[in-house]
Each structure stands twice: as structure tokens, then as C-alpha cells.
Length: 289
Image (cartoon, rainbow, N blue to C red; front, side, top):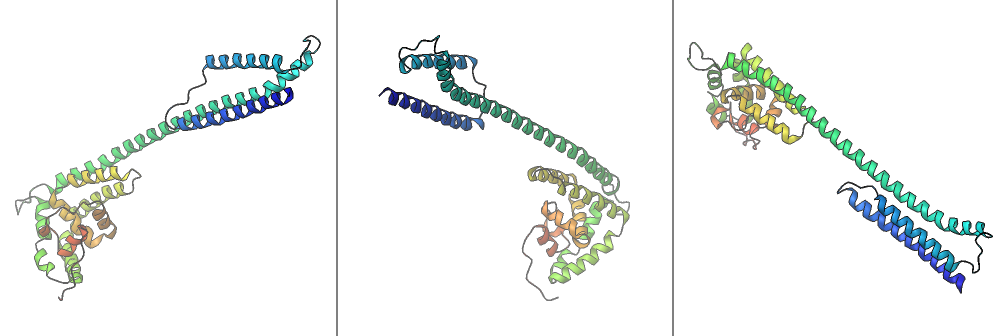
């Protein structure tokens, strides 16, 4: 009867250890993502060791062989204690090792996240430095060449060019789609054949291309694109939108993507087709020319 009782206690202790270990794994895994994993408390380890040692002694004297003479049976006592404690202590050591590994993994994740944030900050600072340098060059160029008054018209150069560009907007809008594109391109070409115009468009497209090719999040790039849009006056945006639509396919796609030319008034576009393109509206039904 005693041997069955001892077997029952051994199996019960084993199941209790396994169940406790599973519960421990579950609790630790549940908390890893929410907060730091703390090391095991030293006092808790000492208390558990004392309780475990006391249980071993009680178990030995209650369920071991009666009439054991310790000096004569030291080897058997050692075998009993060693056989009982070694698996349990090895399992506890595994738990401690697991907790240590979790702590190290958690710290490594925190370090990786911190380095990623630092990298993002450096990338943004680098982007901002280059972006504002390009934007400043564009703004200075506009101040020197497009925002000064024309000697003949007595108005700003950009305003004069802009008015010339949309001067035939109503006339072209009465034509069919293909005719609008063809006539509009010829009209823009006759006005934009100036070094000042070319230089302005190149500087503006360079800034927009830099924004588009950046690896920054989309929300940040939209913010910089809005800043680029606000830097230019309305007639400068008319010049950019008109030239890019007729001559630079890639650039006109960027203007539409980043909504640089969608806020102009309807009469400010070269024709209705140009307006619908930049505002991403359906094209008009074909008309007879």
C-alpha cells in the first residue's frame, strides 16, 4: 500500500510541476508584449528552496524505509534525495534560463526599436536639409526673375506669362479633346520658349521629384508637397502646370499626384482638358472641331 502511495505522490508532484511550468510559460508570454520582464526575486528563490528542502526531508522520513540508519545507508539517502531533486532543480533552472532569455530578447527589441527611431529621425533631418535647400533655390529664383515687374506691362513677369497662357482658354475649351491638347501645346510652346521659363520649370520639377522619390511616410511627403505648393504664387503654378502638361509627361503626373495644380480657378488653365486632368475629373465627351 505504501509503495502505491509513494508512486501517487511522485506522479502528483510531477503533474504539479508540469502544470506549474505551463502556467508560468503562459503568464510570462502574456506579459512580454505589454511590459518589461523582471528577473526572479532572490527572496522568492530562497523561500522556494527552503520549502522544497523541507518537503524532501518530510517525504524521506515518512515515505522512505522505516528503521533507516543514516550512517549506514548514506548512499541510499543520497540516491533518494538526488533522484528526487535533480529533475525538479533542472526544471527550475530551465525556467530561470527561459526568463533570462526573455529579458535579453526584450532588451534587444527595445534597442532595435530605439535604433529604428533614431534612423527615422536622421533620415527626416537629412531630407529636410536637402528639401529646404532646393526650395530656397526655387524661391530665390522666382524672386529674382518672376516676381519683378516687367518694364513694358508694368506687372510681375510670372503674372504676365500666366495671363498669356490662359488667354485662349475659353476658345480652346470649345474644341474636341485632341484639338484642345494640340492647340494648347502649340500655344504653350510659343510662350515658354524663354530661358527664364525653362530654368523655373527645371527647379520646380527637381523639388517635386525629390519629394516623390523619398522613402519618408506618405503623410510626411504630402506635408512637404503642400509646402512646395504654398511657396509658389498662383501664376507660377499656372506656368508650371501648363508647361508640364504639354511637354513633361512624368512631371505632369507628379503634379496631379501631389495636388500641386488642382486649386487654380477654371479660367487659369490652358483649356478644359488641362483642368480636368489636374483635378482628376472625367474628360468631356468628344466634340467636333
